[in-house]
Image (cartoon, rainbow, N blue to C red; front, side, top):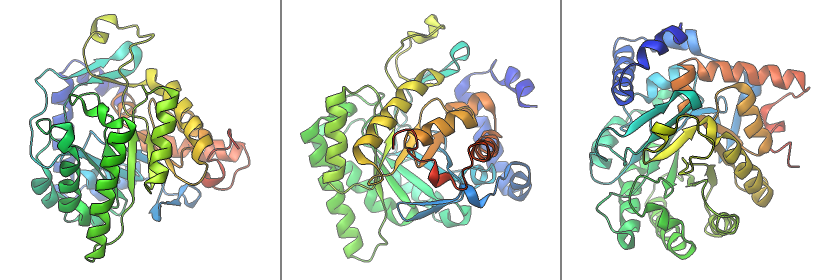
Length: 361
């Protein structure tokens, strides 16, 4: 039914649709509808389960950060068949984000442009929503960033504050320095700035664990718009500083090849189908550099099981969708997982772990 519903939804403002979707998921959870959703959308198959960064994932299809910004509906999203959900991006202080409108569909391109600007309720408030995170029965990642008003030279303190407040309430954490929608944030990807930032975060992590906190993996999310040399430096730095994995990639500033030229002129990060080839190419290059040493979560232009399979064969241990759900609907995780099994059967593969990096090895 989603194609019919989509025609109606696509006549509405995309941010309004997002808020309505979150409200519906909340309602379903509050009315005990999670079990029904799980029956409709669940996709359990041991061949798709894996252990990555010491965490057990029931399937490789996750929901990227940006949908559940305030950690309000990760339980409902788990019932839709996702193998993990990443909440955020979360900043220390609440902030309203950039001026509206700030979210745009490019239907002809199966893409979205957003310039949300890390709108969220702040770490202390969101912590309350995460107290029951284990009840989702899937891994919950927490994506953290800096407040817009915090200068880059003080950015490390923002990430440290987020880690300190939220550390007990997620399975893994993601350093977001790659969003194009917070002024100068991507400057933190410059090698020495990034080294200082990651070292500060890792020191805070060690302090928390020394004081009794359970050890949690920390990943780095990278932008697709870096030059080859810069990406290589960033990945090398991530290894040297002891990070646990890479998320590749965030949204792009490129507008190459878009059909919808009017909306393409809007500022912000582009996601969806136009990003697919670029993100897959980066996953392949990163995997060549890190092999199985650092796991990769692949993001960008994933709509189908074939898209996910391609990312995994390029080197991704897990994948995430977001724009794909806007265009494909709530059954996207179920459909991708079902198709992955079909593709594995076709290729005589017994477990999803055998697929990781198959095109690179």
